[in-house]
Length: 308
Image (cartoon, rainbow, N blue to C red; front, side, top):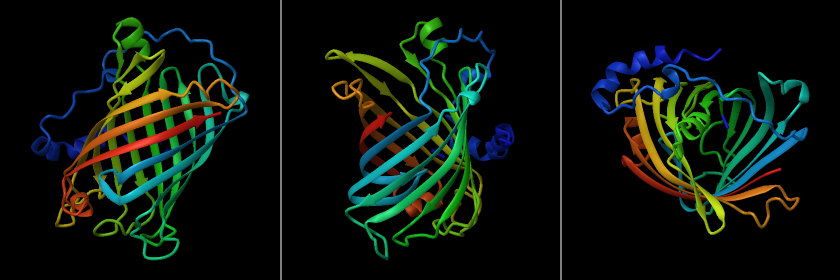
């Protein structure tokens, strides 16, 4: 969970660096090409006034945008998001869903200097999701606190634009896979001491999550390949001279979602078990230094997710 700065301007600034460092850069997303006719609106079930989503994640390492945060022991990361579904804001052309939530990270092995050492990070976010047709825009403010005193608290303003292309790839083209592209931008609002010079930075991300549904043992397992490329639009990633380094990292992985049908549909909400293995290749000097000089990371995670 985490007006919009023109992406073209930012990519233009990064282009000289990317030309040398990542010649294999991805092509322009399909949704920026000649648009196809929008699908007919599907009838949806009425939403409850309040909806709750949450998860409990277990992972071996906590890597955030290429920067290592925690490693070793068992890392447990619970989260909760409460959304407000006001009927007056759910129109046919545009729906607006405000939300508030929290995300936390704890560990059995701590690098926090103060008590509670096990409590590494606690984030609070407040925002809204705007949806129109197949497009969605999340805009939210996020406050990150570190109860164990690893770093000072940080503030950030984020925006994520995503496109649901299943109507085109699956329904019209009859592909088994949807692509699910997104673009994200994050602006730090205060000085952070978790990078070399403590300056505020602007983060830019492009990503896709090709997804396919596979029948398995009487249920449907969703498999996806979430792939993200992170850039520094301004001082988010730095080289060893303290200058902006445009290309931060690239990550890709395999994600499997298994619905827990013995719980779902019985008045206890919808539940699923999600397993993920992610490989990250780190490029920026500041992120490599934070990862103890290593440019590669492989992270496994198991998540129990629910929604009401």
